[in-house]
Image (cartoon, rainbow, N blue to C red; front, side, top):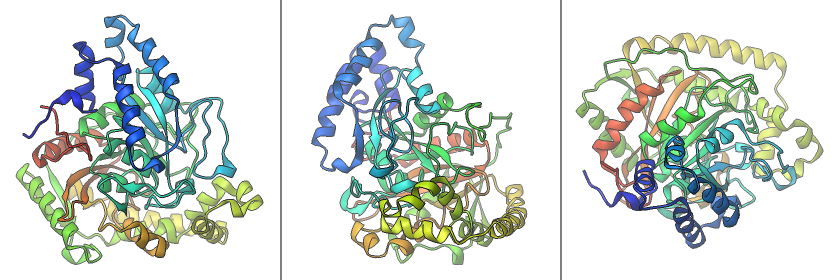
Length: 464
C-alpha cells in the first residue's frame, strides 16, 4: 500500500499516534493548520473562522491533562469544522444568508458531544444558502471552488465542509444531508462522506432544510475516521423529536451489490465518470461481491418527488416568516424555489405521501436480493460557470443518484473512486437500509484500502 509519513497527515490515526507518543502537541497542530488556512487560495471555504488564540487556549487545557485523562478523550486534539447551519454558542449561524443570521446561546447537541470528546472546533463553513442545492455556488459568501481545479464546483450544499477536509485544513467536518449534500461534495473532493440513518445523529441546534428528512453528515479522510466520529455523535436526544437510538442489527455476511440496468445509468455525456463507476464495481467484485441488476425506475420516481413534489414546501415552512417579510434577502435561485413551494396545498402533501408509500412497497423487496446498492455518487461534474448559467437543470442532474435516499430512510457512504484524465475526482456511493452503517463501514474500509488513493487533496495516503 502506498504510504507517506503518517504524522504529517490529519487522519485520526496519524494524529492520535503522534499525540500519544509525545512527538506532537495539539497546539503545534493548530499552528500548522492556521498557516495552511491563511495560505489556502480560496477563502470562500469559511464563513466564520474562530480566532487562533481562542482555539489555542482550548488546546492548552487539553495539554494540561494527565496522560490518563487525555487517553479517555477519543478525539483528543482533533481539529474539526461544522457547516454554518449548525449552531455553535456565541458564533453567528448564517445559513449563508447574512440578513437571517442569529447568535445561538447553546451549541448543537452534536457539537457539544464532539467537544466533550476532546475535538477542537476551527470554524464554520460555507454552504448553498439555506442548504438548498447540490452545487456549492449558491452563497452570498462566494462559490467554494474544487480543490483539484478552481474552475469546477465542489458540490453542495456542504461545500465548505468537504473542501476543508480535502485540503487538509481540518481532520473531519460536519455537513448536513437532505438530498445528497453529505455525499455529492465528498465525491467531488476525494473525501469520505457518511450519511447516517435519519435521526441517528441529533439535529437539535441544526437549522432545518426539510426537518423530516435532514441528517447531520460526516466528511473525513478515511472510512474509519468517519465511523469513529459517528460513534461519538450518535445517540438518542430528548431535544430532537426526530432522533432515534440504534436498534440491534445483524450484519449480512454476503456482498450482493445492486446496480441499475445499463439503460438506466446516466452520466450526462461524461465517459470518464462511466469508466470510474465500472472500475469501482470491478473492485467490489474483487472483494468477493456479486453483481445484481435491479430496476432503478422506482428509485428515480422517489427522487423526483423530492423537488417536483410538495416536500419542497417543507423548505418554505422552515423560513416562512422570514421569507414572507424579506424575500429579497434570498438569492434569486433560492427565492424561485421557495416561491414555487408556496403553491402546494395540504392535499398535495397527502397525495405525495401516498405515492411515496406505493413506491416504498416496490423498493423494499430489493433488499431480499441485495445487501447494498452501489451507485455513482454523481453522474458528472460541472464548472462553476456552467452551473451559474443553468442553475436549476444542472443541480437536478447531480441529485439523480442521491435524492431518494432520505425519503426511503437509507444509510449511505460516499467513497473516493479515482480520477478523471483531467485530475478531477469521482465517487462511488454504497447505500443500505436504515441502521446498516457497520455494514457500509466494513465494505467501504476494504474498498478504500484496495483503491489506494491519496487522502483528499493532501497527497497523503492511508496509514497502515
